[in-house]
Length: 458
Image 1: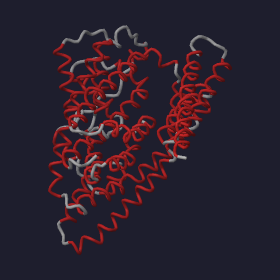
Image 2: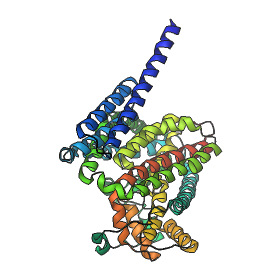
Image 3: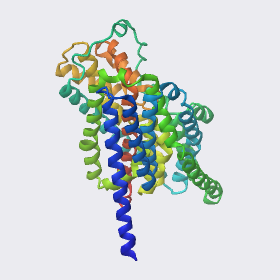
Image 4: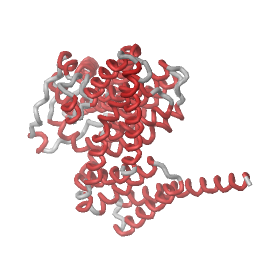
């Protein structure tokens, strides 16, 4: 009986893989046919059949990541073939982000507070904070170096012709880099309500640490009733997260459809080399920085990839790390990282982790110089890296932070700012990978630090 069941399972798995391969092949043919002037109806039919194959795969191998990527492909198809309709489907994505923002503050408050007060980890907070900052600083610096190397090898900026409208345009002035006093001051909220209203994740986390520390210092009989209530709140918020995540595939598909429908694919073709170089550099960053780091600290890589897959897919599709925050925390806790570490390290990464952004920033800075016909010597490129290291601190959670840092860097090292507007044409495509890598970097930090604090974890 068990042998028969096993054979059926193998057969089902083979059929699922067949549907996956057939769907990918048909989609590739359908999209490629658009560039060889094949009949539009034929190309559309082939792509729809390919999506049908992926749908059958998703039905046989259901998971949030599978459904999310299927929805993204369907969204691309909708954006190409019905751009006017695609431009009207922004609601699911916006609604999903509102749901996420609704639960982030109470989730962080409850998990951090119970982690400190409920598990007596008050003495460990300072040590974990130092480890987190060192981790983010090291991987961010390596990301900057990889971005510079990738652009020097590909030369994606050479030969790019700047349109007249871009050459004459003046971008918004760069915001002045924050001083170290401003960075420290911005860690602390004026009040909790303001921090929640402005989605200042790190400020909410700081308040929660202080509240949890104060709670941990009072007597057990007085502390226990509130800790029990907060423990129940944690479970409720995780359950609510599971409900909201059912909307993630629809939100992802709608976001992709809206982007493609508004910008189009053809307008992005001149910068394909830059986008391709960026994703190759991200792959190199994952292979040569994150993977060795996980191996060095004896974090099981395959198990980690399986755990981080869904939150990374959500971040990739929505281009916002915030959307993946609750799911990332839940998956890392399931992975074996203690809750108090997860609830402290991952929110900290939202202000100090630029793993994906660091690769983007150094690449974009070199691209600007190449597009302007400038040959940047080693010393100039080193100066760019040093300025980026300083300018990117404490702003990972700021909207369009990468653009602000890029403008500030261009001004500091005397690069022209006009080519930056050209990069904005493909910024959304690159932001998908940037956000995904930031999510993975946050999870990797939690896994590594969890391993050093609790060797039996994971």
